[in-house]
Figure 1 (spheres, helix red, strand yellow):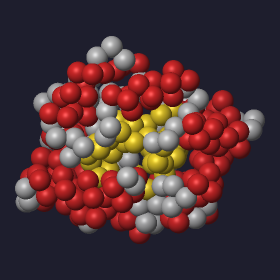
Figure 2 (tube, helix red, strand yellow):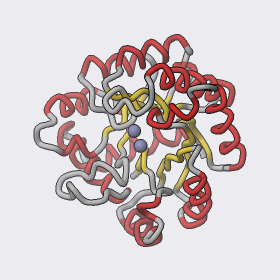
Figure 3 (cartoon, protein in one colour):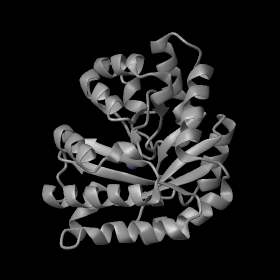
Length: 259
Ligand SMILES: [Zn+2]
Ligand SMILES: [Zn+2]
């Protein structure tokens, strides 16, 4: 079992990290992609503790679109900051999460786009995949991915919540689709269709911990162990055993993020 997206180096997990990792191990997790906000020194520092405590972790390092405003005057400096963290963190395997968020619009859209582009270019220079966060910004996201030839490095659309059409576009662009706890909400009917259509070799599962706790944990802090629930729901929708989903997503994780 893998969790392709979690934020366990964040402040929410500092006080009981060992217990969280123990529950993840007990749930069968063997790999987890931990997202680091490159500009957050506390989180980047905590990553060392997380890696020492749990051999399953690999890291993605990026500037989230919410933080893009800080780099508006010099978007290339965002990539410089990410590059520096990746150089010091031997388990860094991807650039992310990066992208566009027009739902919250916490940074000017122009800054979001330029910071996104610079980080795709960094991923191409380093030949590592990207982890994409996109919300209410499909057209700009696909346009930038195309213009920057991001398909060369590929990666993941994380916490996918789009339609089957959007999923098809992401797959055609060469990306994987990662499903999160939202899938377990009974009214996520379109997402249920997405879960059935994604080819097994392009599928990933995640928690986005501490966010998005799945049913029946809704409203509490999410944690990696709960990815089991996402795997179960995907398996039920596809009419296969949860072990088949676990195995396929583990293989995809290993292919994307290496040893
Ligand atoms: Zn995200
Ligand atoms: Zn995230």
